[in-house]
Image (cartoon, rainbow, N blue to C red; front, side, top):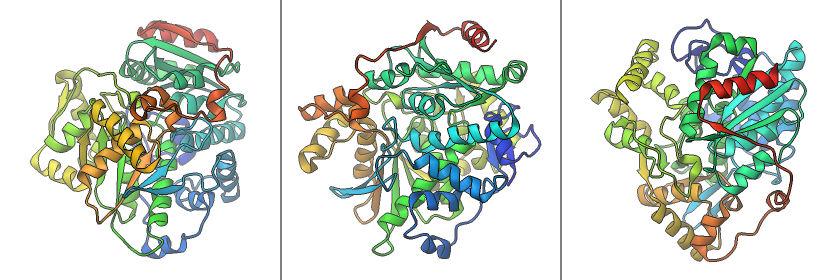
Length: 461
């Protein structure tokens, strides 16, 4: 399997090189030259596999430069720390299926990919005798999952930028209480988009990237998207085990990475309907799907902060396919976005979009109401991001399909919002309760690229 850039400026590379490159050297995102096909016979043969066994079946065609035994061991090690034996169990609640993605070390869906990616990094670095300096941006969950995925690992140093005061308290503590010498937390006075823009700028500075051996841990790294494809297949197998039925996924979405993994699963042949893209008030992706309006506006702070994003990094991967794999059109689209703050689409392109996705924007009042009503009806607690997906599913998806809603975080990570909605405190898992009072380390700085660049180079140098 070889990997190419959405902007067409690199020669095809192998999987291990794609993992280490992160962002393509031409500023684009990496994608496989083609997708392997999942047949109906294969799907049926996978019923009854454990999560790690299924992950090996799905990931191995994409990672054919890693020996099978090594890949199995990496996968097994990655999911051995999850607190549920199924890793990503599916539970039925009040007419929807909840795909619980929060049983990893930081109680968020990012653990599913980042435990695997951290082990991949360590494996490849040891093989090559190299070092890696990871730079990433987070709106909350990616940072903590990335830090816990690489803390203490040989040959790796990590720098995570997050918007100061704009994550949940638990998200902040999960990052800043990790004081390992190879971990650096940077709180930026600004938005997530400011953090993400600076990270992209550092990677696009090819001299700086090469000099300091930068690597990407955000969902711009293809390995993260790949690892997330697995739980779409796993959930499909679980809800169809009593017979075939139409299946749709509802995905709370900010950076387009999680839902793009579902799109990849569908392209590979997983028989699912439209993917429901659920947003909060930061609704650029909903405006795109429903009206063809991909135009930049300001970021609104909400009770679902991991979705408080305007420029969705992984959207470029979808555009590449929407534009019939034309790097020229991708480059032109992002030039238009930089110059005019928007991207325009043809009628034919929007027809394709409407066959791939449907979308709904759920405001904060409706999110809190959904958390409260769902709890009163079922006794099940939704975190604010999951509630956005559940609300959208109940509003848009018909009753006669299996509606699988991705539960992207444990409710305790957003306890204040959940308690406000249900009127009772959220029980704290041990992984959260132990954070209070622990020593923290974090550097607060302005959204200034040169300040961040100097901080990183000084710590590495």
